[in-house]
Image (cartoon, rainbow, N blue to C red; front, side, top):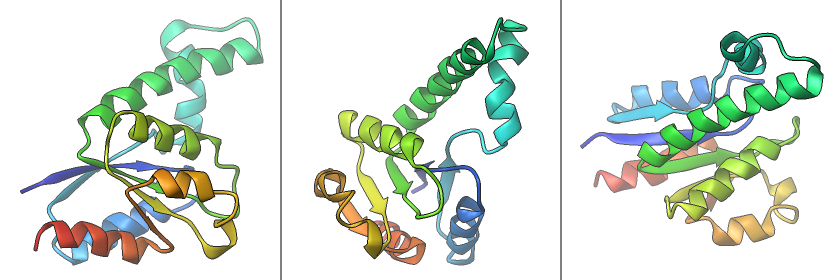
Amino acid sequence: MELTIYLAGQIHDDWRNELRGKARRKNMDIQFVGPQENHKRSDSIGEDILGQQPGKEYRDDAASSINNFRTQVLLSKADAVIALFGEEYKQWNTAMDAGLALQANKPLILIRPESLIHPLKELSNQATVTVETIEQALKVLAYVYE
């Protein structure tokens, strides 16, 4: 059985590659999908498709609509969602994607460090499972295969 997992979270560091690598080494039959990981492409997609925009706000709005389309399609096809919250970056997109997962009744694994227990308490309470590490999230997924 192959699972499709949507990886929600910031695109500024290597956490997705770490998770994919660990899953591969464990021979887990998982297809991972998620947001556009090329930050420059994500920011420019609106103008790439719709043409030059009259200002920064319009450029951001055009890119956001296309990125939101991508998220909606991929998240709706996913069997579950992993949302990683870290300490280094703002996490607005992660929170939005986690909310979409909950709204769509997708099982949600929330990864957050101990330092974010308080600010994420409501979201953690709604998630299917809350863990502190990528390794713990993978163990949750591995349990599905037992």
